[in-house]
Image (cartoon, rainbow over the protein chains, first blue to last red):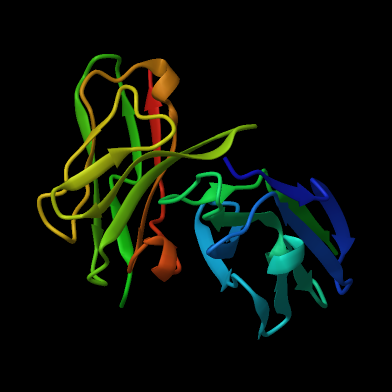
Length: 112
Length: 116
């Protein structure tokens, strides 16, 4: 099945700093989403972005499907950005249809 | 408000006592799915349903049952829960998940289950 790798696994930022999270995947995808899991465990949709670039406030994401990676940019980070960021993909020629395959996440902590 | 709801949100139970976690969506989505999240293992799919009366196994179906009698509901049933089913469970839905029409998945708030 499709493999999803995220980096870095852990990240500590000072409030106000910018960061880039990366997601690499091993096959072509029909669906790619970024989620934020908050400290209470809830998964919050950030972006649905199988290709191209999207922006939402301080967050933006870019997926280069032909090169099999996606980037999530966080600018001017705030303590409320803390949590785990997941990339999840669906599809691929080698199976993995009908479900999202999640990466192992990036644990982000934003400190004052 | 468009949403996926799960109940209960928290549950502590004992080994062998049958339980059901409900999932409901109000977006008229065709596709629904259950995942479990465990430390170090990420989220893994348990079962999914492409439409009413159509269900199929995911990666970790053992010990679970599902049904899809109505489009909006997709309950997860643990006939005889065991401690290794202690986990955080998520229900999700999307308009469709057919290869050529993949669409965004929406997740419920999660159900934290502890089996003692």
